[in-house]
Length: 104
Image (tube, rainbow, N blue to C red; front, top):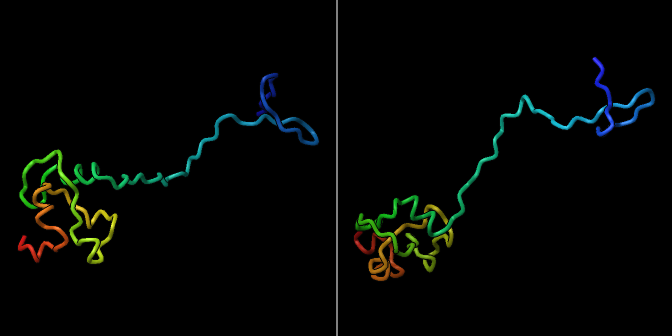
């Protein structure tokens, strides 16, 4: 089957005939969908923790994010595993101690 080259089509010239350049290419065997990872932000931590303080269990939309293992003790600065949603007063009380030291 020959596809004629129209006036407004782009074409590639071969030795014998011009060949029309396709405008749509379909990948029939593509199965790798790029994975979207959420950005690590305070809001994302809150959404993950359902905006509940991880110590008291209270719903707290405006709180601070706590580093479970304090940065001063070698804890990761930005890590999904080392950050938790916590009330500001409890986070201030915790300071640079671990949860175990606080008895929580």
